[in-house]
Length: 509
Ligand code: FAD
Ligand code: DLZ
Ligand code: SF4
Image 1 (cartoon, rainbow, N blue to C red):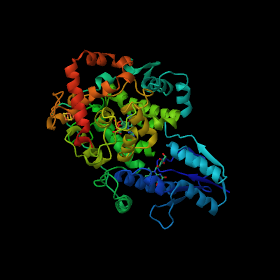
Image 2: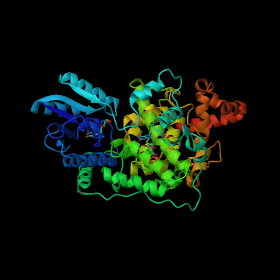
Image 3: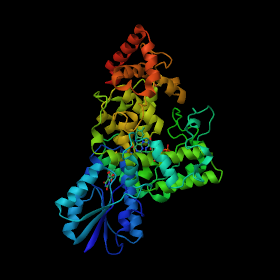
Image 4: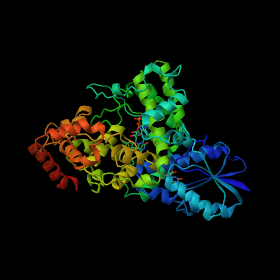
C-alpha cells in the first residue's frame, strides 16, 4: 500500500507539505498536464509555456531528489482531462492507502479534489498550503468580528508575529508605512536596467511548440521567452532585483513610462505563485539588504509590504470570502469588455501601451493593472465577470486566489468595500502625473469635455454621478462629492453628455 501524492502545477516547491508527508522511496508522486487546467480559461500562451516548462523541470528535480515520480505530458497517447481522471487511473493501477495533496490555490480545484475523494471512496488528505508565510487560521482569527478587513492592520500583525523590520517591538524607523515616499513619477534621464533574461533550453522549446500547435487561438506572444522555469533561475532573478533595482523600487513604485514595461519592479510574482520562490525567503533577503545598506527603508519596507502585507492578506481574504465572492457586482455593472482589451486598438495611449506590453510579456506592473486597465473598466461599468476573465487570461501570475480579490475588490470595488475603503477611480490627471503616456495620446488630458478631451476625465465624473446613491455616504469621497455638487448644472450636463457619447461610441464596442 502506497501513498499517492499529487503535486499541482503551481506547487513546485521541494519543501511542499504533501512531499514532506510521504516516503520518497516507497510512495508515488504524480504530476500531470491536464486539459481542463490548460483550458478552464484561455491562458496567455506565455503563461502556458511557463507553467508546463516549470512543471517538467520540477519533475526532473523530484527525480534527482530520490522521489518515485510519474509525469503525464499533455500530448502523450494517454490523455487526461482532469485531476480526477489522473487519480482514478492511478488508483486502479496500484493499491493506494491514501491520497495526499497540498491545499490547492483555487476554490474550483479544492471542490474537484473533495468530490473526487468521495466519488472514488478514497481517503484524501488535504494538507495546509505552506507556500505562504501565514496560515489560513491566522487570517480567519484576525478577520473574525472585524467590521473592516484592511490590509494595513493584518500587515502590522504579521510584521510583529514574524519579527520583520522590527526593533524592540516597534517598526524600524518609527513608522509602519513609507507609502508617502513611494509615489514619485519617473524623472527624465533615469537609468532603468532591463529585466533579467534567462535563455530557453530544449524543454522550454519543446513546450513552446506544443503550445503553438494546440493553443494558437489563445491571446499573447510566446517569443521572446526570457522567464525562469526552475527555482535556481528564479533565484537569479530575485538576486538581480535586490542588487540592481530594489534601491529605486520604493520611490518609483507607481511610475509608468512608455515602452518600459519593467521599471524597478521585481518580476517575481509568477515564480512565487508557482512555488519556485517562497515568500519568506524574499522577505528575509530584502530585509538583509536593508541591514547591509544596499537599499533605503522606503524601498525595503515598500517591497516587504507587497509580499508580507498584500500577498498574504489577499490569500487569506480569498479563502475567507469564497465562494460567494466570485458573484459580487456592487454597481450592477453589465457592459461587456471592449474588444480593444484584446487587440490594443484604441486611441487612448495609456491603455494601448499597457495592453501591448501585456500581450508581449504576460506582465504589467501593479499601477498599470490598477490605475489604467482596472480604472477604465471601473469607470465604464464593465461586467466584473468579463474583467475577471480578462485578468485571469492575460497574466502569467494569475490564479483565482490572487486575481479575484485584486480585480473584484481592489480594481472594481465590486464587493462594495469589503477589501478597499474606496474605489480606486481616477481621471486622466493621475495617469498624466505618474507617466508620460499622455504626451503621445490622441486625446488631451487637460480638456474635461468634448471630442478631444481625455475620456478618463468625464468618465470619472460620470461614474461618480451614476453611483452617487451607493457612494456618497463614503466619508473618503465626501470632498469629491462636494466638488461635484457645487458644479453648475451646465458643467455637469456637458460632462455627462461627453461620457454618454463616449460610452456609445465605436471606441469602446
Ligand atoms: P512587485 O511590484 O515587484 O511586487 C513584489 C511582489 O509583491 C509581487 O511579486 C507579488 O507577489 C506581491 N504583490 C504586490 N502587490 C500584490 C497584490 N495586490 N496582491 C498580491 N500580491 C501582490 N498579482 C498576482 O500575483 N496575480 C494576479 O493575477 C494579479 N492580478 C492583479 C489584478 C489587478 C487588477 C491588480 C490591481 C493587481 C493584481 N496583482 C496580481 C497584484 C500585482 O499587480 C502583481 O503581483 C505585481 O504586479 C507582480 O509584479 P512584480 O512581481 O514585478 O511585483
Ligand atoms: C495553470 C495550470 C495549467 C495551465 N496547467 C496545469 C496542468 O496541466 N497541470 C497542473 O497540475 N496544473 C496546471 N496549472 C496550475 C493549476 O491550474 C493550479 O494548480 C490550480 O489553479 C490550483 O491553484
Ligand atoms: Fe490616457 Fe487620457 Fe492620458 Fe490619453 S490623455 S494617455 S487617454 S490618460
